[in-house]
Amino acid sequence: MPKLKTKSSAKKRFRLTGTGLVKMKAAGKRHNMRRRPSDMLRDTRGMRVMHPSDAKRVYDYYFHM
Image (cartoon, rainbow, N blue to C red; front, side, top):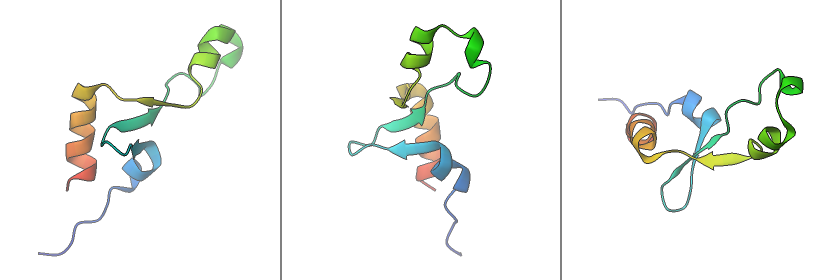
C-alpha cells in the first residue's frame, strides 16, 4: 500500500505543541473588525489551544493517518 499524503489543509490551519496539544488561530479576525470591541480584537490575537474534544478529532484525522 502506498504512503498516505499529509493533509495540506491541516498544515496551514493547525500546529502541534511539544506535548501534543493542537494549536489553532483564534476565530473572528477575518472581516468586520470595525464592529468588534477592541478588547475582543486583542483577545483574538495569536494562537489558541483547541478544546480536547475537538482536538481529538483533528489529531486523529490529520496527524495520525
